[in-house]
Amino acid sequence: MRVNISNALSLLRAGELVGIPTETVYGLAADALNPTAVVKIFEAKNRPAFNPLICHLASADAVFGFGKANPLSERLAEFWPGPLTLLLKHENRIPSIVTSGSEYCAFRVPAHKTALELLASTGPLAAPSANKSGQVSPVRAEMVERAFGPDFPVIDGGPCEVGIESTICLAEKHGVRILRSGSITIEEIAGKGIPILEKQAENAAVLAPGQALSHYAPAVPLVLLEEHVPPAEPMNSLGETPNPAWASRWRDAGTDPARIAALDFHLPLPIDARIRFNLSEQGNLREAARNLFFYFDLPGASDIQMLVAATVPDQGIGRAINDRLRRAATHTGRIENGRLLILERA
Image (cartoon, rainbow, N blue to C red; front, top):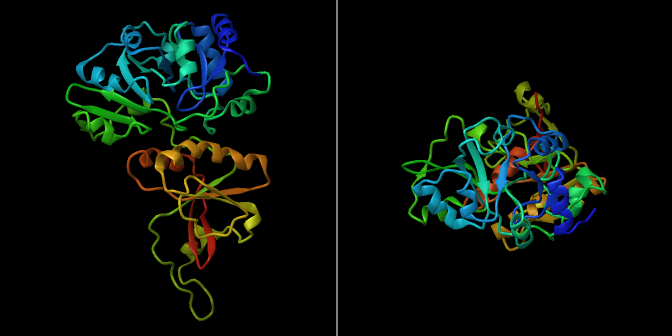
């Protein structure tokens, strides 16, 4: 059910949930200062309580009214409005249900005109992606309605410009840790003269949203092709594989292209497929990021049974795309003698 900003404000003030657009993905918003409303987010998404939420505000000044600034976090805030989330100590002004009991809270100022107009009339809005927990993040209003029903209120802000979730950073005294890759790249952060700390914080998974190993699941199983595959052991003269362990590890996925959708990037994958989605025919990584979740969602409306993809160049926003592909993959695959082989999971 499409609503306008005025309708959304009334619902949020009454403690209800609303789907809101941002430049990254659509969010499932509630008044972050109302614990009863925030509980509804966890219930609607089937989200585990240990997974913290991101608070959205209208400006950096508003953020630093709730979270403690330090010199590096203030420099990172120059990316706002934009697809960057900062972890800041919050002095218990944010309810513990939002932070999963942490002394840190995740904050962001979205670069979306409609979201900023809404936030100008609210306090902080807790707004994780508007999907069921672990499923593909919505990049269009109709994807939100599909997840929560046609009567669920959502502001239609059009397709999301970025298409993947925000970069999450923890600014420490001597540098910044990247806890989740996103549209703001390591190169862009380092370009501001900000040191990047390579080692992950020990409690990074607890502090930052979106760290589950299995996440962003598309509508059908996703087979991610291995990048570097050693040659298989040759068959002997009887047509037998010398090593039975290899044979039991992989199975033929079948060659029927009618059951497969290929997720290409620039050049086509070396498989037969009835449907082909190209993340970017020009090999543009930002276009690929914008299309990723939309294409993840499309096979659900067809009789396609399997999506096959490969990683993209691991640079810039490509790191974020590959992170989402790996978390979404249900199987590893390889192409051998024109056949798609998939790894049997234990």
